[in-house]
Amino acid sequence: MLELKGLSKHFGGVKAVDGVDLRVRKGEIVGLIGPNGSGKSTTVNLVCGVYPATAGRIMFEGADITRLAPHKRVRGGLARTFQNIRLFQRLTVWENLWVARNTAGQGEPRRLFGNWVGGQRAARASVEELLEFAGLHSKRDMVTGALAFGEQRRLEFARALAAEPRLLLLDEPAAGMNLEEIGDLRHRIVDLRRRGLAVLLIEHVMELVMGVSDRIAVLNFGRKIAEGSPAEIQAHPDVQAAYLGDAEV
Image (cartoon, rainbow, N blue to C red; front, side, top):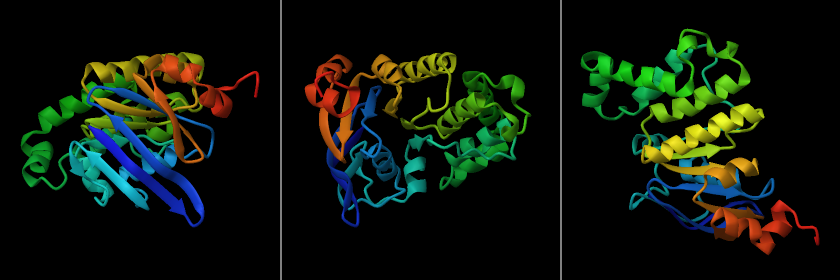
């Protein structure tokens, strides 16, 4: 579904991402880990089109999207969450999801018209389903800025799904969450696999990454230093030295 080929991003003399190759298959959860500053979030920003690539290619479902505008990538089936919550704080919970739900139809007049006019019932039903998924149905009319932090995290997760992606990029979704909230997040991410979505997960909470990922890739100083199953990554000497910790280092 997603293939990065020699992907690079240089900021002057700093090689934030340096020749990264990575694949994410349909229905697969791939973890992307590494120390702070290793290039993880920059990689996500490249995939989403926030930054232009210095070199390399980004392939999505067989099409080259390296130079495609960010909003067209969303229309094409790619969505993300952010490290720092980016919700519309003055809108209600329901309104945040409704706005995102209709981005899926932008550029397709027939579909957009259907969402807003003839097909509002189906579009609204989709939003109601997302409220249930996020556990926020009882707070649907609450102004988003009044939600607790963990609830805002869940809403951002649901808002990304409202755009009807086939590939979801999660950028540190567990940041600031307590153990109970992280456990709940784990179940929601696994549920996406059952729905057939592909997920690229960036996260520092190793219990979460190791518990949900089919494969894990490790970055260090912008380069991929290892890739494999969770067990293989935990035992990899270079990963232990660079990130997970090794008693001999």
